[in-house]
Image (tube, rainbow over all chains, first blue to last red; front, side, top):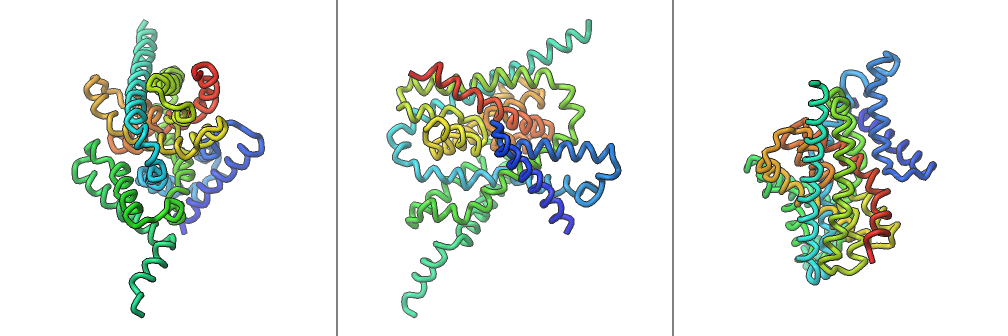
Length: 129
Length: 240
């Protein structure tokens, strides 16, 4: 029962997220808005005792969420198997596509991590002064 | 009753039950192998589950549509799992707030690099225009990338495949690349994984380190936002 209410709350956050995104034609995915909503609920619970009930009590929604995230990789398998529909294209352009994606992902990883470190270091130097 | 085994197969191969079971069992196996190899990057459970199930579909002559009728129950959970990222974010909110500036600057640098590098490289490799357009949103999570591809009149199913391939390659490369570059800051490592390789990178980050997972989840969510704006702009500027 505890698990059900928590799952219900997660789905409700996503549902509201999807509805708002569609209704207001926002250029962001519904589940991302759902994420923000659940975050606000969790922070609100700490401030207002009124909210700390049902799945928001005793870390119930936390446990359910961690259960979902424990197998995050599994959720990508069905879309990944979709590669069987693209075998013709992969036969003609597969090597080029894979090289392009591999190079791009390496460049992106490096650009992101180096920028993060650089800015982080600059800020610390400022603090020290 | 002579044709029983065959008619049983015909019945089962059309039912969602078989393909849902296959998806879960194959993944449980590849995940167990990944665990047994102490989460070696090359033992990526998504990669191996993908080709094993794909080969099984080809051998049995099953269409992807039939397979997806069963597997969609797993696919559906991508949305709720995104919402669930609120929990690790909430639990580590102090560290996240403390790193907000490096995060936002790295977000801008990373998103621009992701889109510009793939478009330029794909043009350089002489790929057809509709392929270039479908590859452009490859660093964001599948649902968003498909939406972007659709709005560009490109091929959403190719975009989804590019997203998954990028995610798997990112998840395989990230740990050795970061170790070799001598980067030990798990906030930065996770943020890069989520930005470049969305949910598959985030799943990998959680395997390596909890803080890396949290920052990866944030990067994935923020990048979905930025890329939706960035891809149409990059296409106008960069594609012939």
